[in-house]
Length: 303
Ligand code: NAD
Image 1 (spheres, protein in one colour):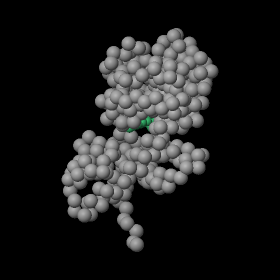
Image 2 (cartoon, rainbow, N blue to C red):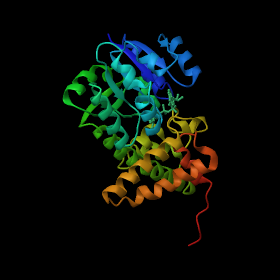
Image 3 (cartoon, rainbow, N blue to C red):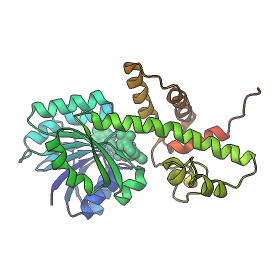
Image 4 (cartoon, rainbow, N blue to C red):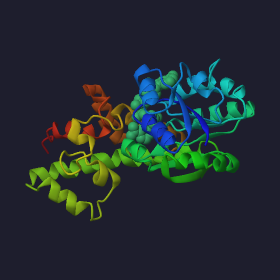
């Protein structure tokens, strides 16, 4: 069993670390939010007072942080994780599971390689439910050797572990996935709003469409209309889950990449406006499926 340092114990990191503990690994964790560190200790892990302390003596160091700036800060700054990892004993494998821009992922991996360390970008899909049940999908970028070394650890937190390619490829796959999800969530929301105006029962619509061609993860597991999926954020006043502010970050990443590559993504550009509106309305800390509520409050412009 491995000695693991885990930094970033939020909505995703906490249940992921809990699954590593369940699998018999030793987990030492750190988060700027002291309550999250205490919760890890209660779950059987060890509390650390800094990221460097969590990394000390670890064979595997994992981060699950909000965005690229946090990942660069935690790994690269003086006294940061790469420096700590160099002195932590047997060359640890570094794994960043956050969703960040490809450039930041490659910058951190290059710095790790310069320090003689292997690093994987391994963002996830499956939401907090997948994190809790250990059924996440991991999209991994990095060398074949690092992937082989990291796979048994990732298997304690996920069901599908894909090697997407070289460093940054995991983030590239994740950005494409979330761009599709962001658009799809709005499509599902529009379907349920239209159904209501047509007098259709939402449970019936859900039953039918989840076995018809509109089937999708957002519809089946995460229905934005309250009712049909009891575990969905829509049934708890859109408590996250996956925050609208994080989805806005991801769709912005997709648009920056699309612009750089000259790729037409007009629906994603329009979807971005909805998540921006949700954040501007003060719903940034709500689940991203809150776009349903936002839409339901709008009136159709006269045609
Ligand atoms: P979160 O905000 O709940 O958790 C992030 C944690 O990082 C917080 O507890 C925060 O206190 C901590 N943190 C921030 N800066 C830190 C620092 N410098 N040192 C130590 N800890 C620090 O976010 P989340 O929902 O857990 O998402 C984490 C990442 O996973 C994001 O990149 C997100 O896009 C991605 N993601 C989230 C979901 C989801 O459903 N929530 C799904 C897939 C991917």
